[in-house]
Length: 132
Image (cartoon, one colour):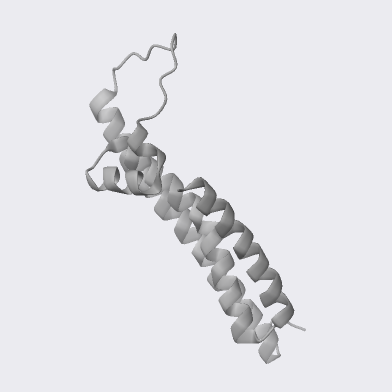
C-alpha cells in the first residue's frame, strides 16, 4: 500500500500544500537576502561605530511608514533596506493565506473559502492599521 493520493481532491490538496510551502520558503529566503544586504551595508559603513546607550534615539521619522521605508530603500538607505526585508518576512504568511484562498476557490471548498477570507480580512485590517 502506498501513501500516494488516489482521488482528484487529494491530488489537488497535495499540490496546494506544495505551492503554499514554496511560497513560505521563497518569502523567507527573499526576506533573509534583502535583510542581509542591508546588514552588510550597515556594517560596511558603521562597523567600528561605538553606540551610546545612555539616551534612546528612535528611528528616523521617514522610516515609520510604508511609503517612507520603500522610498528610503530605493535610495539605498541601509536601515530602510533591512526594514524592507522585515516587511517581506511579515507579508510572506499573508501571501500564503491569499494563495490558500485561491486554492480553496479552485477546489470549490466554500467553507474553507469563507474561513480563509475571514482570516485574510483580519490580517489585512491589522497590517493596514500598522503600515499607514
